[in-house]
Amino acid sequence: MPGAINLFNPTRGSVTLALVTALLLGLVHGVTPDEHTWPITFSYSVGSYSSKGGRRVGFLFSLAFTLQRALASELAYFALTSFDSALRWNFEIYIVVGVVMALSGWHVLRRGHPLHLTLRDIRAEISGKHNHPEFVIPKELPWYMPLVHGFIAGWGVGAFAVIIYTVLAPEMPNGFVGWVPGALFGVGTMIMQIILGSLFGAWMQRRKLGSKAKEYLARMMSARTLLGAGFGFVVVGMLGVFFPEVLSSISFVTPIHIHNLHNIGVGFFLAVVLLFAVALWSFKKTIREVRTLGLAVNEQANAVSDGQGLKS
Image (cartoon, rainbow, N blue to C red):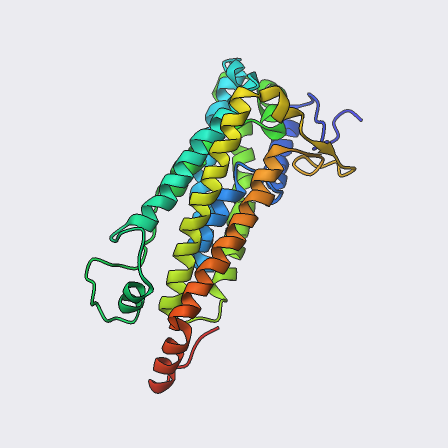
């Protein structure tokens, strides 16, 4: 039906239809599993261990993502994005994203202390007994890292990007507004990523642990997830660069006519299977350390003695 909104297979129509479609596609993109958004938002939001921190991560990541998509949409209007059609391009982006993720995780694990620590060293720092001044609890990464990730990840190409660049951007009346579909797509993604980031952060916030134990758990889990998932991105990206046809053909179709859920392939594996497998391993490993150290018990005892108690 001409003029009707079709998010699965949109066609050329009008400027208004193109702009509404771009925003709605962004909302769908932000909430469905996507290798260009979920791994970064989840990893950093968990590290913030708060709903507010998760919202901030989702906003910063999506802000840079929006700027990138606006830029790429403008380039698409002038037909300057032919490189996006190269089969290897998306896998090359995987490598760059994976390297940045892995370096971010490695940075947190290495900051202020050797990578291999004894439990005694960790206990001394978190209990406040600074017997080893060189050891510090892993700190948050610089606030701008989600921005860096957002801009890099935005150059990845999937079904949503193809629609923006080849259908919606060319619908604009002139080059002055060629960027608008990409920007609206980014805004839609931003709205959902802020919500998801808030939920991810709130999940960690609700762990029944003392403040320092929760801080240690959140940041170590975040760092290990970034490092492990980043390594996976690099491996898949390198395989894709050398064997693009093979990896691109590994997929199966579902009856769900929603992009990211209809054609399940390598991207879904990275965004869901790999990410949450690494995150689950990171959580279990780190929570074992917390329990082995007796951090939760020690903090609870100290809090009760102070008449404060633990907050859920």
